[in-house]
Image 1 (cartoon, rainbow, N blue to C red):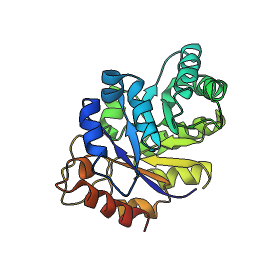
Image 2 (spheres, rainbow, N blue to C red):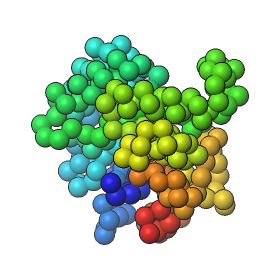
Image 3 (cartoon, rainbow, N blue to C red):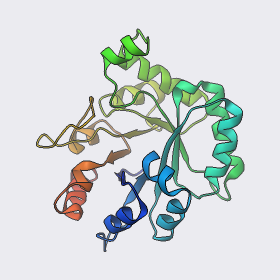
Image 4 (spheres, rainbow, N blue to C red):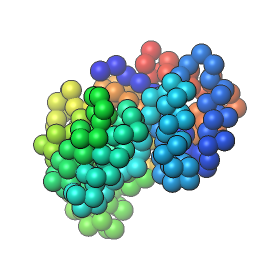
Length: 233
C-alpha cells in the first residue's frame, strides 16, 4: 500500500473546515474528521467533504458492546468513508462485530477498519497507574495489534514509536496509522510519544496523521507539502 499523509481537520465547525480546505487548489489531501467536528456538524460534514473529492478517515473510536458497534458501523459505512476505527480494548468480539457492520453497510468495498492500541497522549506511567495495565507499552501495543489482526481488521492506530513493533508482530501487510507527528521546532501539545515525518517513514508505517504542524502553520499548503516530501518522498 502506498504511503499517505492524513490531515487532522480538528476544527470546531463546517465553516472553518471548508475555509481550510479551500486553501488547497492543486491537492485533494486525505483528511481526518474527528469527534469535535462530527459531533458538532453531524454526518453532513462527511458528505460535504466527500463531495469535494477528499478521502476521509472518520475517527470516532467506537467502543461499546458488540451489537451496538455493529449497528453503528453499518450507518458509518453508508457515509462512504475510506477509513474508520474502534478501540482495540473493546475485545476481539467487538472488533469482529465492527467489521461485520462495516461490510453489511457498505455499497462497495468496505472502508479500511483499524483499531486504536494506546492513545499517543498516554505514556507508560499513566497506562500502568491509571489503566492498571502492568505490561510495557511495547508489549501492550503488540498484544492489542495481534488481537486486532485476529478479529480480521486491516490494521491499527499506534504511535510511530511502536509502528515497527506492530509490523514485527503482525506482518508487513498489516496497516499502521500513526498520529503523534511533530517537528523538533514544533509544540508537542498533548502528545507524549512523537516522531518526525522522516523518521516515521523509516518505521514502515503507511499513514501518518498530522494536525497542528499543518493546520496551524502560517502557510498550510507549504506545510502540507513539506510533510509529504519528508514522508512520501
